[in-house]
Amino acid sequence: MRSLPLCRRKHNCYVVPGINLKPEAISIVMVSESSPENPADCYYAKGNPLFQQTTVQAFNDAGCNVASVKDIVARGVYLTTPVKCGKTAYGVRSETIRECSCLLEKELALFPNVRVLMLMGDVAIKALNFIARRAGQKRVIPGAPPTKFAAKNTPSTEYASSRPTSKLAPVSSSRRASEG
Image 1 (tube, rainbow, N blue to C red):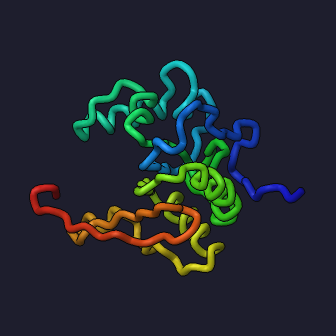
Image 2: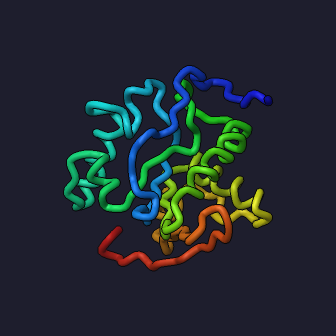
């Protein structure tokens, strides 16, 4: 068995969500950057974990009234990370993302009705591109960080797929000037 190149990762807090949900009810998967250093802070940890606090606040700020990750999942949104080990440094090595993208690919395949993948940063984007390459496709997401798209006020792009591990296709939508 080959070990993962997880330098600057905390191996003893490898986090894979252990939650009960109906996979067919999930239509949106939000992939954030990396698991927290402390497993007690992950999305699905008991109590009021840090990832839950910040995500619930973001959903509420966007006008979606939720009180917990359970409420978010009930709306058909599954939250995950492309790298399952706790982040202990600023960056994540490409080797780590490539290796961990295999786990993400298997995780995404559990949800047959996913229509939207929300990729929340460079690590999530790189992970999905690694999945696409293994499927024989070219990079499906541009290499520029999402903030550069917003700063130039260009059309936003969502990446949707009915089967995330197979054909990934960009779906463009124009940004309204009032959203800026």
